[in-house]
Image 1: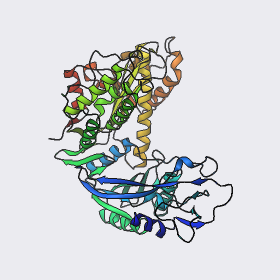
Image 2: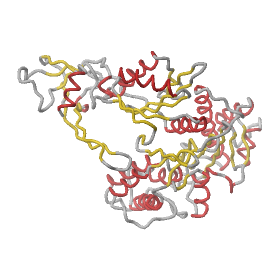
Image 3: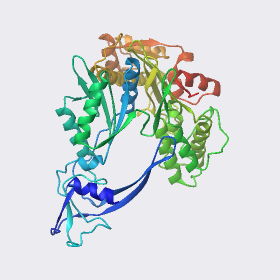
Image 4: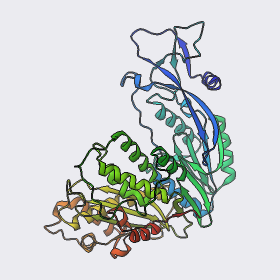
Length: 491
């Protein structure tokens, strides 16, 4: 606590002033945490002074709060590029990051307990720097870091504002920001070392060396490339649910399961929401559970016993595959390949369709989704074509991102669909009576195809990788598609 308090004073975080009349006073408290390593061992004990942001009043002592963070797809893409180019990837952690943010608003806070100034016990802290807990603290810190990076020659990407790129005739550097965690890689290790020194002089940081544990994801060297795993995170979920010793199951969803809204209410809706929310994060490296997790997410408002059984089945599947993760391998040619699929009328409650896609950069799966469509499709072709449009939008974004990274694709992206009607519509300039109501999606896809920026092809259902994101499968089909997603055991 003393070390934290001393750091706050050195940082000129506040000044003591008499409390002005008719002002909102924000409270504060001490929060204690145990920082652990990837293997679960204790790294250090930490005390942090946190402002009670729920005391703040919007429009009085805070305005903008949103702070961008790097997208998981961007992280996987940059790691694939670094792996292919043989670049080293380093990880940095900014000490007391939020304390570097400069406040634009006037905020008054009570003095911290245990450190009340005896000479001025009734004074309050007028904050000059952002403090953990303040609603605007993440945004203030990001703006401070962004301005510094821009002043040192980096450029913020429009496709992902938390990705910064430094290009010169001889050097390419990528820097990714997730709050106070930073990943940096590039073609010039000496430039990176010098830059880290400059960054450390401005913001106190810890150089954690080669990337090994980032946002709960273990990054391990593999004989074929890099292995991304969340085994510790999954073990923690199982322990919290008292399911560490349950019997595992071969799939995350029963092939005959059809969840609906009606049923006996779950015994503990709060626990259900906690577990399902945790499972959402587990999909960062486990794409094969995306469909099952998305389905149980659709009943967060009113879970039933059947929904809880479905969530526990996912946990039982993860119990048997704790050591599984996502494998990234070097790629010789930069090329995008996508699979798109939809399950027509998959939801019996509202007759909407489930769609999914899988996008590969070379051999690596970098982007995927499993979601319910927002409107009812009048035919399977319409559901498939809407899925094509969603996938095309993701491909457009990835192309823009690659352009900003300075990467040129060897061929236009290839989009594979197993529905002949949807494939035909992407190449046919005639809109029929059955498809005129989806003309926006139609023209969006057709424009890319006509310009030669996208190639839509048919794929047989047996080779449709995105099938795993649209419906529950048998154990044999599930295992085959899981391997095509590059999900496997680390051993």
